[in-house]
Length: 342
Image 1 (cartoon, rainbow, N blue to C red):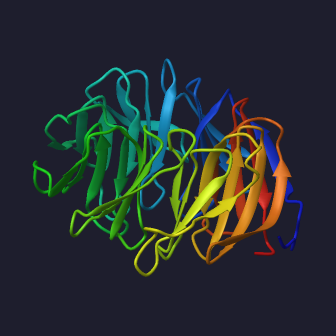
Image 2: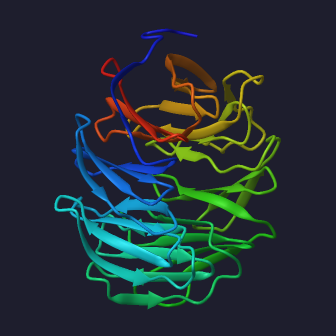
């Protein structure tokens, strides 16, 4: 393993109200939103100054999402609502009833004024003023993941037994793929050709969106919730065990190939994986607080840097510039790590 900078350095550290359940950079990279499982949503400047603390959701916040120009931040929580905020003023712009007591998924489209919410089996689409655009048919099971196709107005949803793709223009799915199992997470490749799902039965599926052909990878120790594609769509990083597993999806794909295994099998469970927006640079985090940065070359991963936060890391997110990395922990610590040498 190489060591350009074996020890990552903290730029700043802050605290939020509790367990950091989600964090996300605004598209321009000027602000970082951090959602606490206790409810509040904190807005920090790039330099770590607390700019706003939004009240979030009574009984707890589940997730957050920025709109395309960073003027609005959506949150979802355990009060049956998705709320949309103006983060610079701290004002709530509107709230919508999403159809179930727990709203676990919310996702803004980056190419149109569309906000998708997933609550139980209810999948709804709203405009930027809170108007209902589509109330899609109830899903066959609880919605476990939502993701917009990069650069397109197509939305993928995952639930038990079904992966479906939707359009704002029509109520019925554009395409749907059946599989008798529980999908826990999904991620589009950056070129939009492939959707990956992490599954309850300790597998990962790859779906070719055009043909519907799927490929399954197994051998994971636990269910898989952690997924990240690199910018080219070549590499897919996954959790599901004490090491990060990275598949090379170039050429004929990963079928029959050996993945890169990043980490020590004796370590604790991987809790987050995130590729940088450019280059084959991957960040990984685990339940013991280890944060690491890797460079992928073929099926080899070289560790470029590391930092031990000592507490369970729950979320990580690269700054849009790719020169820093934010991490949140189970006790509410938020850390920014600088990586200017990348």
